Image (cartoon, rainbow, N blue to C red):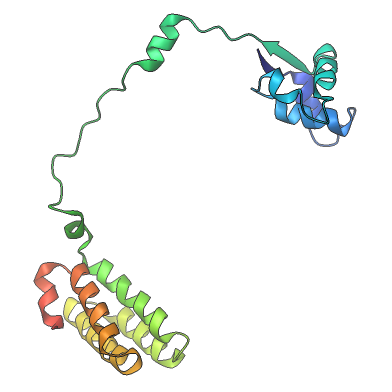
Length: 179
């Protein structure tokens, strides 16, 4: 047995309408689709009495849900097979390789490494990355950014950034960065 709100309940719960007590209104809010037994323990055990009152006054109705065997069988049938894409990238790392991904990584490194420590340098790199319209100019800005990282955070951090950038660049453009 499941509880359902009536139109009278929906009207009661609309703004500006207050004919029920706070406890009764709270039960109305919680009642939709719940079993009556779930709400009986609410309000220090008074939930059962309040629900009986709401049902008697026409705010809630009790529905018995009877499912037929056919309805259950329909729900249990497997979903139709979804066509799988025929062309898949060789691996997920290969799918992530792109110039836009590499560019966004450089913007991210610029923010992480320079925005707080040297805002003017961060602005310079941001502007240079925005103006880098071709691969060569983007790689040139990337190399300059990595050189600044060497000065600021050391060779190990710069090498980590260089390796990640190589992973993001398409293979034909990854070699010019050097190791």
